[in-house]
Length: 432
Image (tube, rainbow, N blue to C red):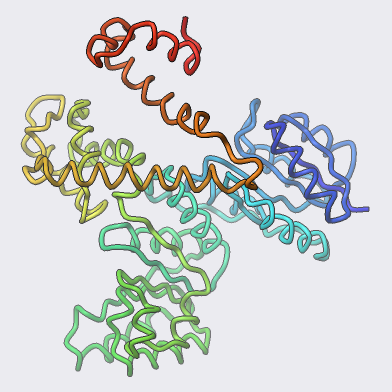
């Protein structure tokens, strides 16, 4: 019987993973800490390991590195709630076979684990030298999914299609993939920068220059059909790796006859979808701080809280590229810290647009949250009062913080009965 080591400190998740392991006819052994997992791996052999990165005593990546030092290391599948690009790249660099993001889809993990246990036991790939890191920041779920695919792309030589609105970081992601997966420099071609009669000559030159290495074709949907045929032939020869970006739906272009269907499938062996900035507002603070630091140079220019509120209220049609320009503007006009709303571009302060964006973002977040809550069977659906309590809890916590943690002031400002407020604070926040 195959034996699988589960290194996971969340009891409920470890139990669920154990059920998955037993369902495929294997024995499950659980460790609730990194050290405990390493000790069990030293005492007995395992055919696979399910490893969480966020362990209470050490990073799961350190556990992965230690497991690799064994004479015949078991294949490792990473699970994490913190899918940063650095974690994803490091896990792949250390030889992890797969990378799953929480909340886990157990139905997805089961066939992957089953297939892994059937593979012949080989040494995992040699640890690669990691080039200098390229800055990509994001903890939003959509960015974590993108980081996982980017990490997969870094561990292979297959074509990659990167899609997303202008300014979302498609070219930056392609640079990460090229830097992490090979030693040859990235060659770039963007056909809409050239007159049509010159585009074919330039494309041929780039294909020749990139032979054996990576070629980035930016806005591949703008390629004329004859040049699409050239790229198809190059992909068929497998003489170089092609990365392609598109700001528009290539599938829609396929249905309209403007893009070759065979080229679409050749390019999208791996597909990285980068979300618009408006859908990842939880990343705004870290992104803005990093971009402002880059723009300010040696000066310390922190963002005032009211300025951060303005950034979160704005729709960001130009995505991260527009945010970078806004931080450059702030650094240019702000002579002394902190950066106040008046130091931001005027368009960010238009209240009508900000209000519409906030209402849309709130509805989108509520729909996504409800989708997750209502995925359980009907007999296990939460009651309405329980759903309302989950919404009310963060609302009350935020309101209380804004009134200096004084319930009396908060009740007066909201025209709310003090006894009612205190009861809610006790029930929802555990405050007396």
